[in-house]
Length: 157
Ligand code: HEM
Image (tube, protein in one colour):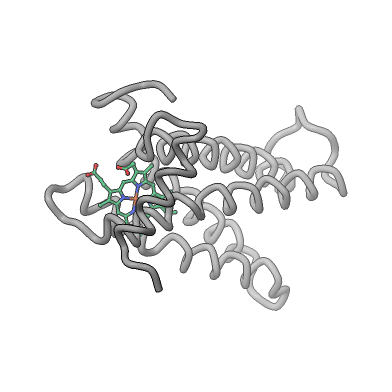
């Protein structure tokens, strides 16, 4: 296992080929993930018959739902990696503490959602509750990191 400083340097080298800094990259990757979470919410609402402006419930909407979910998950991975290996769990104030806590739970909630969606024997309410918990966790993570960065530090790539 290479020392943490080397991991951080390699991560920064790769990320700064595209973005100005690791923080900017993480803020934008998390924002892209959030955009796919919105797609998730809209397609789920359509599947549950709550929206009527999208195509009928069927193969297309289900596939958009699945692929937006997978994409959102993949986009969070490099961000999570940096948070956990380089920054770690920090509690200097409410915002960062809430962020660290929500970040710690997010893949647990994700795993629960993925297991629930495959288990047809569970009551009908479990899936929307799991899906909304996952989306809410990601929204909290985004509000306490990306939004804070864009509004307090810098809005740019
Ligand atoms: C999918 C999960 C996560 C996402 C999408 C995410 C996203 C972000 C983003 C966009 C930032 C701002 C960029 C930066 O300051 O480097 C950030 C910062 C941070 N993250 Fe995460 N994070 C996640 C999980 C975690 C976890 C699990 C922890 C703790 C164990 C954590 C701890 C931190 C800390 C301490 C900061 C610095 C906050 C500050 O000082 O402003 N994050 N995160």
